Amino acid sequence: LLACGMDLLAGFRDSDLWTDDDLERILRDGLVVMPREGTSTEEALSLPRLAPYRDRVHVLPYDNPNAVSSTLVRDLLRDGRSPRYLLPDDVLEYIYAHGLYMDHC
Image (cartoon, rainbow, N blue to C red; front, side):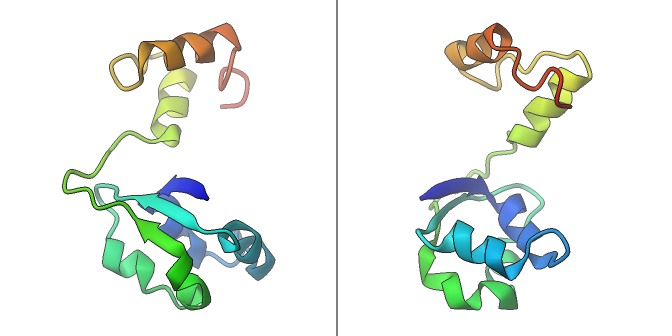
């Protein structure tokens, strides 16, 4: 299963960005989705393009949506700011040790 934030799932509405073949490949095995602040779970799940895959989309039962996302971490690093306290120390050390996101933002 692929894990993603609700913001990514909501982005599947954009057929210029996500083709039907993309959706089939991504959702074929299933998707686990973390709720996100500012993104409506009901709206994202009601996208007509997701209807054939709805039984493969599993939303985590989480009452406190997580505002930390990979986009936020990449943006912080791109802007020269630290994502410390948003990530476990070993994850942050791995990002710095391998130069992840530094050249790609």
